[in-house]
Length: 175
Image (cartoon, one colour):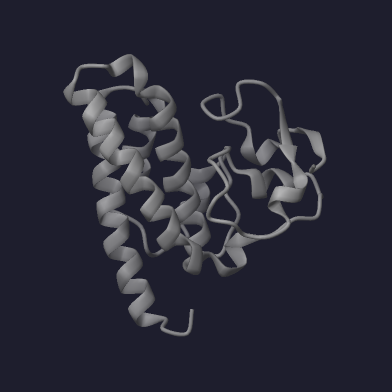
């Protein structure tokens, strides 16, 4: 059995959508390495990193992991699409939360950095492989995560980001 620890949500990750409580409990053994089978938890590797707890730093090989994150999104995307089409909007919040978290994770990791939520707008200004108007679109989504229009924007952001990712991988074949 792996040890669970309570971690303070660091300033870098302080965002009410992902951490309404100021603490998070993680099983630290699960994050010593990378595993595709780890279920979604909001930024576990970053939580450990910013709390100075030893763990795997996936952003150091981020481009390699982005493909897996994009695959996870495809499952969330189809589930969200189905719920919205069935007008079950109330059931989309958790999925949208996961989707936004995955999107931010993919963007930051592809640029070799751990996710920073509290000033992501400043951070992404230095990124060159991001969708057009990502800042404004992401702000809209974060303000209304369970709205259908937010879902459509997030889907579009992922679609555009995936194209940027493919270009990035072609340019940087040694990643």
